[in-house]
Image (cartoon, rainbow, N blue to C red; front, side, top):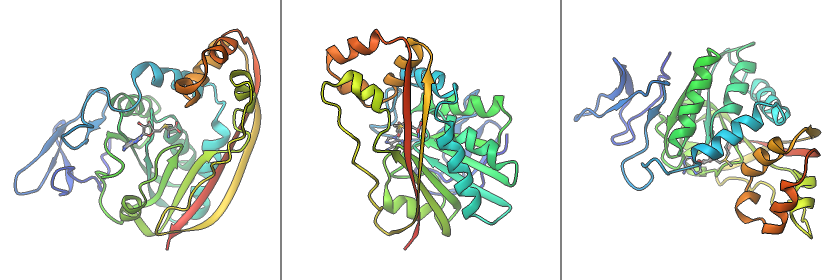
Length: 282
Ligand SMILES: C[S@@+](CC[C@H](N)C(=O)[O-])C[C@H]1O[C@@H](n2cnc3c(N)ncnc32)[C@H](O)[C@@H]1O
């Protein structure tokens, strides 16, 4: 496995490099981070966030992988890959997915980009389980993608070192994103569209509402483009429907009756709709 050259120590910000099965920094006091069997490394700074419970749990992540591997959201990651490809003219590029979850999208994006370019992909998520699953997928598919548990508000990544930063359904720390993005790089942000999962909302809520939140331009960035993707997909059974439900925010806030109605739904044609915006540094 190749280790990205732009990783930095979460404690002293010195560059990290591989020493046997650890990433070690060259700071005055050397800090080392062991690589797990999967290849992921825990680069979460010591403190509150650095525990097994941070981020989504194993069950939630498993539901996500099971759902996503059906290809139902591939229209989104395929479009993100095309957008990165179009925006970065270089042959070699470094792509960071900030808040990558279990890495399904980053792996998909990497395998698409690899057809045209030499790619170094980095996925960072607060969830150790997520980073571990991402590393396993990358290893299985032989992709040049490295996964770390880390805090996207204090990324273990050197400044000005990423050609593209991707943020899919995740928080966007504007200042930290600007720090790691090259001046000519692109920030690609994905958020739910107005009618995203409308048919599921209509089952779980008596009065479903459209998603009108949109994407707020991160401070220090300028909007370049907006693309909407929308597609109807057929979910063939209740297991697939419940996997999708489990990975959405509705899982935590939907009323009991709505959950029961969904539990009895055996197939569903559903709208997958996302807004993808690109930003450049101001
Ligand atoms: C809704 S999920 C999206 C995951 C993935 N991007 C996708 O679209 O499938 C949001 C992700 O952001 C991660 N996240 C939230 N705050 C974070 C932080 N401060 N540092 C790292 N990851 C964070 C969560 O652990 C979660 O995996």
